[in-house]
Image (cartoon, rainbow, N blue to C red; front, side, top):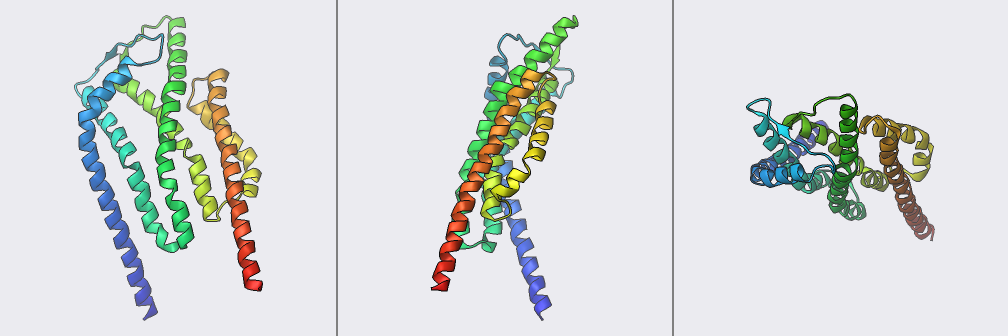
Length: 253
């Protein structure tokens, strides 16, 4: 009999997860349609406010290049708009397993997920992407190459830089959330510092042009983000220890 109840419980959880995924996908599809209406203004901005000093003349090498670019812009817009709702649905699914205090504490992270994503997008587009374009353009000129950019390759190059950086800017929120759940603590993060720094160096080299200055310019904010995450984790962990001590004192009395 307990097995049947446990089985029903698992089925109920899966059914709830399916409903939440379905609602999220419906909202994503609706926003995606709306994304096509803003794709052209976004495209105009991205092509007219490109890296300074570079005159870009984008070309279409297939009949579907324009459609592909519109799709990519609409997808990014839909992802950015539905990200807070998506995170909320994840929180709503796992929150029954949390204590009321933990539920309230983790709920406040949702707006910051969106804010950190936007900050990462801005840093990737206004800092890293121009550096990458300037480096590749200067190298092409040194080799005497004629720069003829395809519109699809241009936006693919841009997104391959911006999206990884925007996701890396979620690091403080992820660390805070895991610390809240007591899966991470500042001591563990400090022990992982060497490995984390090495991973950040690898990432910064992979997403920037192959020169020291660009990689260093990206690496410094990433290291600062990691150290900021350690500080935030330490503050939260201290509050947790103080709350635990207070509960023990009440129990002993």
